[in-house]
Image (cartoon, rainbow, N blue to C red):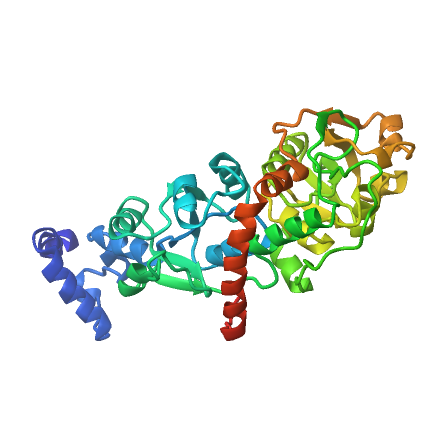
Length: 429
């Protein structure tokens, strides 16, 4: 009998769900008794309206924000890496556009690194989710619409330093106009122009890196060879203006150690002027275990082995470059030249590896084998270097075309001085 008396309720809910639902919800909100409606409790009201759950889900599912940043990324350094880190912090997914060789030549002059090398460097950074190759230097309306529609980009990112086209207009004017532009803070103390200046300064002092790479498991994949017997001179006027802080190290770190049973892989070197060869050897090393620990030689060690003009990047600059790599879990800042038993025990190292590409140096002759201990323990392994690029080979590209780069640097240095003279404090970072 109860079922028959309540039949009108169910029929009303079936044929007029929205109207009847509104009546039921109004009754509940007004505190009226639900006994008149057949003892139907308020929570059960959602059952006849499955479409309400759709709105419930949509309310709690946050849209992932996709951000875009572009650049030449020539002579990749920790300033580039920090820009990408900041950009990633403004969204959930970071898409990076790498400007084509042709566009760089047209706007800045010839790049030091080719597109393949620059793509390897950008793809190897831990904050990058997607890469667009051969991106245009200027954000045109067509390309901007492609970013919004095809790549689902929400915001276009750039640093607080001005980016002007050859005609003097702002390269990001369109993105700003449509309200889809966000700004990050430029990393002070480094730029590609500054690095080129260091290399050119070293070449003028007669202590420039020489491209004498060979294939041997002994030595570093990025060591710098100098003219044998050449008189080493003091460092030139090009010095690093980088101000290291503990906060920056933390920002670049993963913040996690290896698990108790992790297979820890150790590789060491100078890692000066971080390049595609470094990325690929680190990728290969990481594949041999669960945790990649990288030892970075102190400046003094590199100078003793490679000459007073080296390293081109100081210890903290080199450490940040390595920490930014997605294949690296932890670094030893100022690692010892020799891999000792104490090191192996302290860090629970399972295997010590070296690459096959190196740069021979006469000053290394007669030195004790830095890998004698891991070799005696049977945990030393030589792995094939995927690329033959080295720090000195990159430097030689600049030295070989020094007139072009000196002319470009003169112009760029003037604009950078103007930027630093006029810049104001930018929060964030």
